[in-house]
Each structure stands twice: as structure tokens, then as C-alpha cells.
Image (cartoon, rainbow, N blue to C red; front, side, top):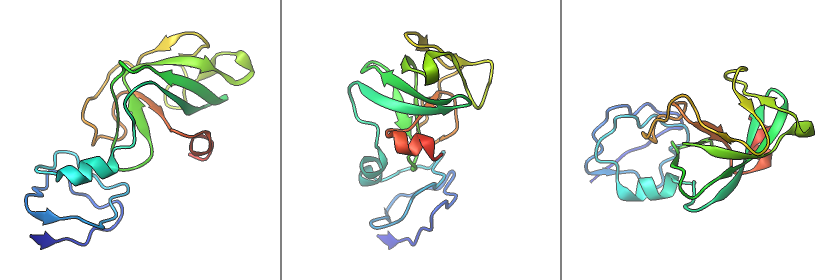
Length: 144
């Protein structure tokens, strides 16, 4: 097995990781899109979106929105803390008014409504692909 020294934000796009020893590697922000033979322990150690229903937070142009990710919604994260979901229920918005997405101001979050992105990308290694983007903690949403 080959011991690799991986720096944060390394581009491993399309790499074949067969036999690579990534124990202790800092993969924060690493681009693993299209990588092959990613060891199971890397997938387990970088998956932060739990199964089941989640209450999560999104930073919008109008402030922090609280979302409910139902158990049935697909969700993912790459190697960082930003996550994506296939759909979400809007629980609370700032001042209980519609909140605009930072990415697309025409996309609104309204309390009580289910929001769905124009596209959903099931490839977890594409961090900024289609999906409702969120963080697991309010602190992260406020600071990203």
C-alpha cells in the first residue's frame, strides 16, 4: 500500500485510489469528483449527513433559514461541511417573510413550503452541484 500525503483542497479529480493509504490524510475541500476506488473508510469518515430527518440551516440574502430535511430526501456532502439535499421543508425564515437564495434571488424560501432545486446531482463529490445547500449547525450557516 502506498502512503499518500494529501494537503487540504488537493485535486484528486479522476484519480484511481486503488491501494492508496489515506489514513490520517486531511481531505478537507479535496476534489474527489470522478475518483475511482475510494476506500470505504474515506467515505465513512467524510460522510456527515446522517440518515433520517434533520433540522438544518441555510444562509440567504435575508438571513438564516431553518429547514427540515425529511428522511426520504437524498442528501450529500463532499469532503467539507457544506451539504446538499434533494428537497427540504422551510420551517422558519427571518421575520417570517420570504427569503431569497444567495445563488438565485428568484428562488424563495417561504415558511411551510417544500423547496426543490431546479436540478439534483446525486454525485456527492460535486460540492457545488444541484441541490438545496445547507449546513448542519446555525453557526456554520452564519459564518459561510
